Image 1: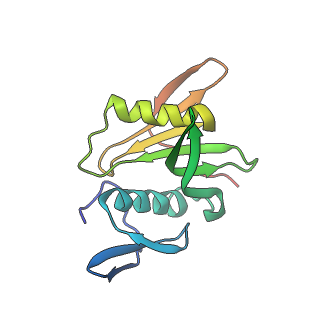
Image 2: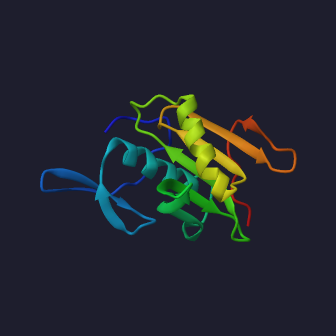
Length: 148
C-alpha cells in the first residue's frame, strides 16, 4: 500500500486466499485491505493515538438512512454526551477530493449533526466546524484533541 500523509500505525496485516487483510481495532476483526480501507485505518489510528479519542467513542462503517436510502458512513466519533463530535469521509488515495465528496458528507451530516467534518484521501485532508445556530461552517486547520 502507498505511503499516506498521516502518521503510520502499528497495523496487523495478513494474507488469506491471496488477498491482504488488515485488523480493524474498532470492529475487532480483519477486513479486506482496499485503498480506502488503508486510509480509514490510518485515520482511526490517528484519532486514537494522536488525538486521544477513546476507542469506545468511535464507530466505523455503520448504516444510516438518508432520504429512504441506506448508506454507510466511514467513521463517526462521539462526544462525552453521546452526540456526534466528528464525521469522517474517507476516499482512496487515487480519488480526488471534489465538491461531490463534500456534498456526500454534507448529506450524511443532515441526519447525524456532527460538530466537525473531516474529508481525506490519505494525502489531502480537509476539516471544518459546523455552526448550527448561525447555519454556516468554517474550514479549520485540524480537528481538536479529545479532552477528558
